[in-house]
Structure formats: structure tokens, C-alpha cells
Length: 456
Image (tube, rainbow, N blue to C red; front, side):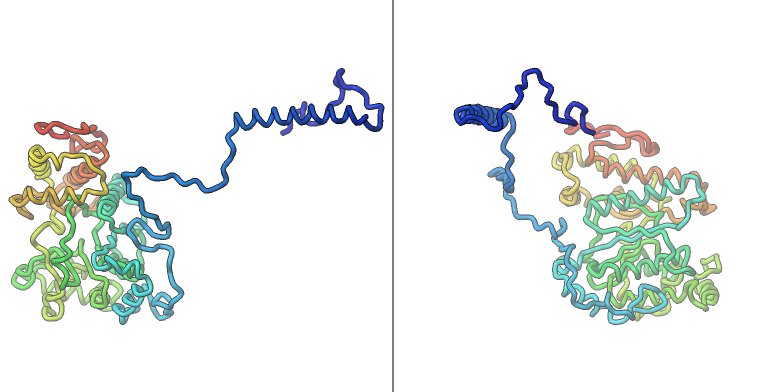
């Protein structure tokens, strides 16, 4: 809007003189011109004094001499990979015969993936250790009143872990195959993730009811260099006891290769998408005497493949039993307080572990800590932080649980585990849960707490 007083020119000033002559005399003209010119110079001087002259040239600020600054290519991510380059060279993505669905097996995947990496060289470096974590939950709201909140916290825990260690994460809450529900739903997601991430060597499935409770620990990938699948399991329970719980399929690491594609194809053929689904349930119950329910499940199916086709699968599958690749929550949650105190005891005598530091360099401090954990042991009875606590038998979304224990023990155990893990993250931000049973309160940590005290 224009102010009224400036909307039209005014000529009613009593000081205005009528212009009766059609032209000025020459001397008068010079006089008026001179006055006007001086006025213009005066205004310009004041304007330049109060208003800095704008600079339209690029401004370059020299970095401090003590810092070494390298030019940054904005086309690259913080991990040195080019996220803005996808050459026109044809890859498997241009093949109309390819499919993400379980219904159509993938062939020559090793060659296809190698070809993609050749056209995307920035992803080739470090590909052998690149991991994508995959998890998910049901497509509908939870029946358990606190189920959605618990699932959110379980997911936050996984995001925290992946952020600390530089892993990508994919959360799926849809059934990618209409018949493959419940525990079978993971297989179509894992296959799709392998195709969506040819840059990753490993796809890491972690159930929604499992959480990281050692935020510093990293998988010993060098140990698995000659294997294509890693699960928590025990050969003796497979080949001598013939138990369907001889391994746990809720957490597994699978290599992004043709062998894995073939395994997923065979594995899923025992699931609900198969016309022989009921028959497979009967076969599993006859094979594993401790299996009490009739349906074919993903875990029994994997144990069955290992048991019946040992020569084909055993050498390619690493049964990890040296640490809690995933650990049964019942034998873990009661030890969190003791573990916390033992770690604090280490820090009281190791100033470099008490030092505040950026979250991005957490792995260095994890390496520092390892020298103090040699006597901690691993697995049951150890005071080392359990890597993954798995709430097997507790279903946070539906509210169902194993009748061996009360539902409240499930939910209380989850809260305690989540706070135990969260404390390891919150410390980088200056806070902790002082009570593992209470998620609602936090305590600020002194920036440099004394050696004879703990941060909480």
C-alpha cells in the first residue's frame, strides 16, 4: 500500500514561485545547476558514509593458518561416494526381465552387481565392508497400547547405532509379498534390499524386537570373509540335538551375492507362498521333536536346510556363538546394573575413556576400551555389554508373549534395555537416564567428572 501523502505530487507550497518565463537567463541557469550539483554531492557523501558499498564479487575468507582446508566437492557425500552420478551405461536396472519379487529368481547377480560397481567407481572403494541394516514392523497400528511407542524406541535404537557407525538403514512396514506375513515377511524385504543396494556387501536383518545394547561394538567382518550368512547358532544343537532353536533367524547378516539369492529362493519355498506350505510344517515337526506348533516357520526352515544338506550349506554359513550376536533377554536384562558399574570402574582408572568427545569419533574410544575388556568374557555370565538383546517371546505390537513369563516382565525389560542402550548415546550429548526403569527423566553429566565419581 502507498501512503496517501506520497500518492500524488503536491505543488501547493507557499514558497513556490510561478514559472512565468518560458526559459531562464543563462546566469540563473548556471547558478541553479551549481546549487543542485553541490546538493547531489552532499547527499552522495552522506549515503556512502552510512551505507557500505555493496560488493557483488564472490567473497573468499581465508581459513586460519593452523587449519588445513581441502576443496570440497559438493557432489560427494561425507563418505567419499558420488551421489549425483548415474552414468547412462546400461545396468541390470535397465533389464525388463529383472524383478524384485520372490516369484522370479535373480540370475548372474554377481556379474550384474560387479558391472554396476564398475560404472560407479566411487562406491567400489570400501564396498567389502559396506552394510545396510534392514528392519521393519506391521503395516497397521499396534493392538498393545504401548506397542507403537516401544517400536519407535526400538527403531530409534537402530538409527542411533547406524549413525554412530556410518551404516545405512531401511525400515519397512509393508508386506512386500501378500502371502509372506509374520516371520516370513523378512525374506522379500531382504531380497529387495539387495537389489536396491548393489553398493553394499552385506544386508543385516534385525528383528523389530531386538535392540543394540553395546553401541560401540562392531561386527568382526574379517571373521566372516569366507562365509555368506552369519546367524547366532550352535552346530551341536543342529546335528546332535536336532533342535529348531539351534539357531535364531531373527538377526542375520547375509552377503549380497548370487549364493544368497539362491538361498532366499530355496528358503522362501518353504513359506506360505508355496503350495507345499502345510507339508513343510509337517516335515519340520517330524524332524525337530521340540517344535510344538504345526506351521512351517523361517527358523525351522533354515535349520532344516543345514541339517539335511550340510555339504551344500554348512561351509557357507557362520554359526556365531562367541558373543551375543543376538541374546535371549531373560538371561541378560538382570545384569545391566553390574555391567554399568564395571564399565564405570574402568573409566575411573582411565582418563582417556572419561574424556568428552564428539559422537563421530566414538569408534576410537571403543578401541581404547577393548584393552580393558579382555577379562570380561562373552555371552552368558559375562559383564561385557551384550551386543544385541533380543526379546524373543515378547511381541511389543500385539501384546502377546510366551506364557513362561508375565507380559509386564516383557515391557519392563524392554524399557530397561532401551534406557541402558540410550545412556551410551545420551552421554555424547551430556545426559543420562539415572534410573534404567524410568525413561522420562534424565540427569546432566558434569563436563569433566572426577575420577572417584561416575557420571550418574
